[in-house]
Length: 496
Image (cartoon, rainbow, N blue to C red; front, side, top):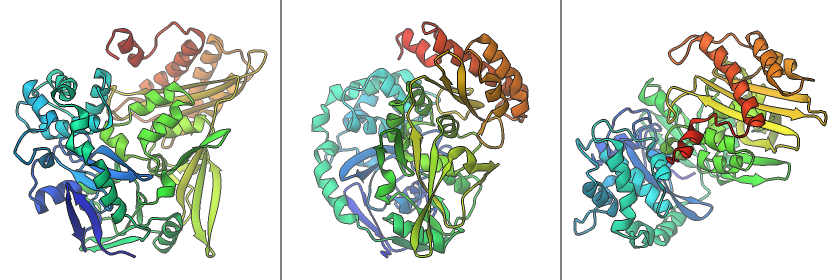
């Protein structure tokens, strides 16, 4: 094992022999390094004031991503580069083109949110040339401003590449040097760090991960920390030990295996979104609404599933697609794997079918066959960065006679777990796909669910919406010219 945390803070090598497992990047920057440009707003990954950029090696290629420093644990930066707003100014004090664009477009008033906006725009600039307005809006959806208004900030996003070309950006010019330095820092040793609040482990292989989970079955497994981070910042939980999965390169892999996609547990939402979009554009829209871009950069498919949230948006879609979950553990000296239908993994509220020592290794997602119809919808109070009231995903198979031969209807937010609507499915079998079929399935939904009343929605509203989503499915598959989605309406109006 290696007992020293190593990463680059800008161009400076940082080496730490001791570190608490849940010390956040934000607290370390502000309290230890006195780098106060990065702000704390919500401390839960919602407002974007704490946005920083992480540079990491993705299969040998340097990749820059904006993330929320308030819920990211510092030890997870091993082998990475951390960029903050303090690193943008030139050696002569000159502003970076992103900062200059914010000045020229009057994109800041009180300035509290400004560093986060600047870092989100910088990440966009480093990854894309001449981004469209919709991409700028997407990149900024995880950043909140309460005084300037978004139009000047969006204008700055359009202006930044006019001030200076991307090719001249020193961060892009220095990519090869940074990649070489990170390559030298990365190894196959397990990182083991001790701090006053506990111990942190970061294995680099699946085998080492299995050994650690077997040795510490009570450990908290951390992927992107987009939810676990809140256990620390809001619930004040002490997590000891922590096992971080992010250094296991094999878990990041996405592959097309013919009849299905294989998604490694640490595959990030950005990459999973691109892969699932090849199955259905509705999956692309669903995943575009996962938090802000900072959350999508950090979050993973394995974390989304293993977390077991009843309002996680991806499990209903994967259950509707009949996905399979691959679990692994160390057993009698060898790596043992178990494949189960994803729907059977969720047993009860926050309770899953995961045996001692097991961890999620991959998800297998079947492709849609001929005669299959698919639908996914998320209903929430805000279009961007909001938790679902109801999420519905459906797959129907139509026979040669046009009648429904198979139905898979899955919902999130309707029960303590993501769950199929068995009675509604039975009501559809053998029927033509029409208004009467939808009416029969809708009438059966109260047999499947007794939703809760909470701050997001009433039980009556949830049942009504669950049925309405089936009607939307029918309209979209039988009345192609009828627009049913906000995203489509915006695009039609010229805003997409």
